[in-house]
Length: 89
Image (cartoon, rainbow, N blue to C red; front, top):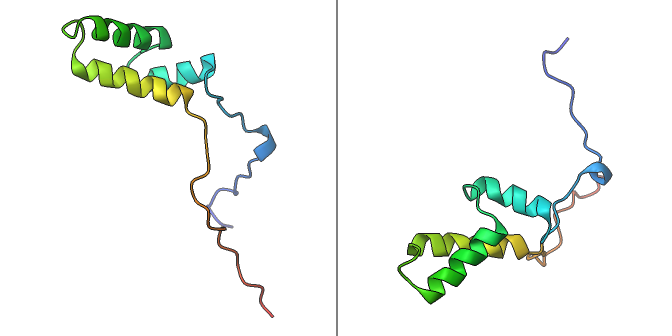
């Protein structure tokens, strides 16, 4: 007997994806952006435009990146077909 665990199969139909512009996407991104929300990001951008001294430049860049990720829609970038195994004779 082998001590290796049995392979795990995943049914792709049951995998939940996170759609852009949804509360789930906001919560997902919030974990990586230290608790930032869409409302906070918009506020930082608005206040920084009015008074550049109100927020550090790094916070402005973080807010813009957060909103870009929040609105981003997945798209394929590779146009080449995937590799396929040759049929053995």
